[in-house]
Length: 82
Image 1 (spheres, rainbow, N blue to C red):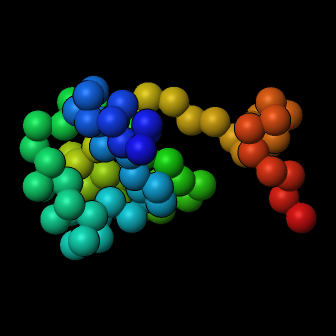
Image 2 (image 1 turned 45 degrees about the horizontal axis):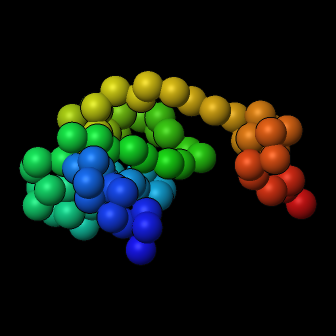
């Protein structure tokens, strides 16, 4: 509940598996949130092809930061893959 209130306060949308933003369901969700100021997407598989990159850029904006899972494991943020 705290995260939802914080995200709403900042007009933010958080998408997990955001590489699928070109899918009809994600597009419909984002189309119904036109006033979102921040759209943060999380995924481990960005950049499949130019089409998906262009759609993602249109819906979410440019990628501002990319972090490798290895770096997140070293920081203690992500689980070590098995």
